[in-house]
Amino acid sequence: MTQRVELATVMDRVAVDALVTEYAVAVDDGAWDAYRQLFAPGGRADYRSAGGIEGDAEEITQWLTGAMELFTMRQHLIVNRQVHFETLDQDVGDTARVRADFINPMRFARGDTPSATEDTSTAPDFVCGGRYAFTLVRTGGGWRFNQVVVQEKWRRMKGASAPASGTP
Image (cartoon, rainbow, N blue to C red):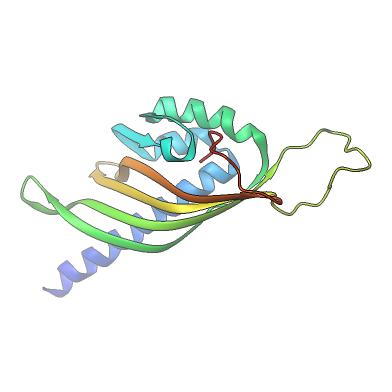
Protein backbone atom coordinates (compact mmCIF):
# COMPACT_ATOMS: atom_id res chain seq x y z
CA MET A 1 0.00 0.00 0.00
CA THR A 2 1.14 3.49 -0.72
CA GLN A 3 1.11 6.20 1.91
CA ARG A 4 -1.73 7.93 0.05
CA VAL A 5 -3.93 4.79 0.21
CA GLU A 6 -3.05 4.25 3.87
CA LEU A 7 -3.94 7.86 4.71
CA ALA A 8 -7.27 7.57 2.86
CA THR A 9 -8.06 4.38 4.82
CA VAL A 10 -7.29 6.10 8.11
CA MET A 11 -9.47 9.07 7.14
CA ASP A 12 -12.33 6.70 6.21
CA ARG A 13 -11.91 4.86 9.51
CA VAL A 14 -12.18 8.14 11.44
CA ALA A 15 -15.27 9.18 9.43
CA VAL A 16 -16.98 5.82 9.98
CA ASP A 17 -16.19 5.95 13.68
CA ALA A 18 -17.63 9.48 13.86
CA LEU A 19 -20.86 8.31 12.19
CA VAL A 20 -21.32 5.55 14.79
CA THR A 21 -20.76 8.12 17.55
CA GLU A 22 -23.26 10.51 15.92
CA TYR A 23 -25.78 7.66 15.93
CA ALA A 24 -25.41 7.12 19.68
CA VAL A 25 -25.62 10.85 20.45
CA ALA A 26 -28.68 11.35 18.22
CA VAL A 27 -30.59 8.53 19.95
CA ASP A 28 -29.50 9.59 23.44
CA ASP A 29 -30.40 13.25 22.84
CA GLY A 30 -33.61 12.52 20.94
CA ALA A 31 -32.23 14.45 17.94
CA TRP A 32 -34.50 12.71 15.44
CA ASP A 33 -33.76 14.98 12.46
CA ALA A 34 -30.05 14.31 12.98
CA TYR A 35 -30.77 10.56 13.33
CA ARG A 36 -32.68 10.53 10.04
CA GLN A 37 -29.76 12.25 8.25
CA LEU A 38 -27.37 9.46 9.25
CA PHE A 39 -28.98 7.11 6.71
CA ALA A 40 -28.34 6.78 2.99
CA PRO A 41 -31.40 6.88 0.72
CA GLY A 42 -33.18 3.55 1.20
CA GLY A 43 -31.33 2.93 4.49
CA ARG A 44 -33.03 0.61 6.98
CA ALA A 45 -32.77 -0.42 10.63
CA ASP A 46 -33.87 -3.52 12.52
CA TYR A 47 -34.64 -3.22 16.25
CA ARG A 48 -36.76 -6.40 16.48
CA SER A 49 -34.37 -8.23 18.83
CA ALA A 50 -34.99 -5.40 21.32
CA GLY A 51 -38.77 -5.64 20.94
CA GLY A 52 -38.93 -2.94 18.28
CA ILE A 53 -39.58 -2.79 14.57
CA GLU A 54 -37.74 -3.10 11.26
CA GLY A 55 -38.15 -0.42 8.62
CA ASP A 56 -36.75 2.45 6.64
CA ALA A 57 -35.15 5.44 8.33
CA GLU A 58 -38.42 7.39 8.48
CA GLU A 59 -40.39 4.50 10.01
CA ILE A 60 -37.66 3.87 12.55
CA THR A 61 -37.43 7.56 13.43
CA GLN A 62 -41.18 7.69 14.11
CA TRP A 63 -41.00 4.55 16.27
CA LEU A 64 -37.96 5.77 18.23
CA THR A 65 -39.61 9.15 18.85
CA GLY A 66 -42.41 7.42 20.77
CA ALA A 67 -40.40 4.60 22.35
CA MET A 68 -37.75 6.92 23.80
CA GLU A 69 -40.35 9.07 25.56
CA LEU A 70 -40.31 6.33 28.22
CA PHE A 71 -36.83 7.42 29.27
CA THR A 72 -35.57 10.74 30.62
CA MET A 73 -31.95 9.58 30.55
CA ARG A 74 -30.26 7.54 27.82
CA GLN A 75 -26.57 6.89 27.36
CA HIS A 76 -25.31 4.56 24.62
CA LEU A 77 -21.79 3.33 25.06
CA ILE A 78 -20.64 1.71 21.81
CA VAL A 79 -17.33 -0.13 22.18
CA ASN A 80 -15.13 -2.82 20.63
CA ARG A 81 -15.69 -1.41 17.14
CA GLN A 82 -14.45 -3.66 14.35
CA VAL A 83 -14.39 -1.87 10.98
CA HIS A 84 -14.00 -3.66 7.63
CA PHE A 85 -13.97 -1.87 4.29
CA GLU A 86 -15.38 -3.66 1.26
CA THR A 87 -15.80 -3.14 -2.45
CA LEU A 88 -18.75 -1.87 -4.48
CA ASP A 89 -18.61 -1.97 -8.28
CA GLN A 90 -14.89 -2.78 -8.17
CA ASP A 91 -13.98 0.40 -6.23
CA VAL A 92 -12.19 -0.43 -2.99
CA GLY A 93 -13.59 1.19 0.11
CA ASP A 94 -17.10 2.23 -0.99
CA THR A 95 -18.79 0.15 1.69
CA ALA A 96 -17.95 -0.64 5.28
CA ARG A 97 -19.19 -3.00 7.94
CA VAL A 98 -18.90 -2.23 11.62
CA ARG A 99 -19.54 -4.71 14.38
CA ALA A 100 -19.65 -3.11 17.81
CA ASP A 101 -20.85 -4.00 21.29
CA PHE A 102 -23.12 -1.70 23.26
CA ILE A 103 -24.29 -1.11 26.77
CA ASN A 104 -27.20 1.26 27.21
CA PRO A 105 -28.19 2.51 30.68
CA MET A 106 -31.48 4.41 30.76
CA ARG A 107 -33.72 6.02 33.35
CA PHE A 108 -37.49 5.67 33.19
CA ALA A 109 -39.50 8.88 33.03
CA ARG A 110 -41.21 9.79 36.30
CA GLY A 111 -44.19 12.00 37.03
CA ASP A 112 -43.54 15.69 37.63
CA THR A 113 -44.20 15.20 41.34
CA PRO A 114 -42.55 12.06 42.69
CA SER A 115 -44.29 10.32 45.54
CA ALA A 116 -42.57 9.93 48.88
CA THR A 117 -41.78 6.29 48.05
CA GLU A 118 -40.54 6.91 44.51
CA ASP A 119 -36.81 6.77 43.86
CA THR A 120 -35.77 10.26 42.67
CA SER A 121 -32.13 9.45 41.90
CA THR A 122 -30.79 9.91 38.39
CA ALA A 123 -29.18 6.46 38.32
CA PRO A 124 -30.32 4.15 35.54
CA ASP A 125 -33.04 1.69 36.33
CA PHE A 126 -32.97 -0.09 32.97
CA VAL A 127 -29.82 -1.35 31.28
CA CYS A 128 -29.45 -3.42 28.13
CA GLY A 129 -26.51 -4.65 26.12
CA GLY A 130 -25.71 -6.40 22.91
CA ARG A 131 -24.16 -5.89 19.51
CA TYR A 132 -24.73 -3.59 16.57
CA ALA A 133 -24.09 -4.56 12.96
CA PHE A 134 -23.77 -1.39 10.87
CA THR A 135 -23.47 -1.47 7.09
CA LEU A 136 -22.32 1.83 5.60
CA VAL A 137 -22.01 3.22 2.11
CA ARG A 138 -20.00 6.16 0.85
CA THR A 139 -22.33 8.84 -0.57
CA GLY A 140 -21.77 12.28 -2.06
CA GLY A 141 -22.40 13.62 1.46
CA GLY A 142 -19.96 11.24 3.14
CA TRP A 143 -20.47 7.92 4.90
CA ARG A 144 -24.09 6.99 5.72
CA PHE A 145 -25.83 3.94 7.12
CA ASN A 146 -27.33 1.54 4.66
CA GLN A 147 -28.41 -0.82 7.44
CA VAL A 148 -28.39 -0.89 11.24
CA VAL A 149 -29.19 -4.17 13.01
CA VAL A 150 -29.48 -4.36 16.79
CA GLN A 151 -28.87 -7.69 18.47
CA GLU A 152 -29.88 -7.22 22.09
CA LYS A 153 -28.26 -9.93 24.20
CA TRP A 154 -29.43 -8.99 27.68
CA ARG A 155 -31.38 -6.47 29.73
CA ARG A 156 -31.81 -5.72 33.39
CA MET A 157 -34.29 -3.65 35.35
CA LYS A 158 -33.92 -2.77 39.02
CA GLY A 159 -34.24 -6.04 40.85
CA ALA A 160 -35.32 -8.20 37.87
CA SER A 161 -34.78 -9.13 34.26
CA ALA A 162 -36.99 -7.18 31.91
CA PRO A 163 -39.02 -8.70 29.08
CA ALA A 164 -38.63 -7.24 25.60
CA SER A 165 -40.61 -4.01 25.60
CA GLY A 166 -39.88 -2.26 22.36
CA THR A 167 -36.82 -0.32 23.46
CA PRO A 168 -33.51 -0.27 21.55
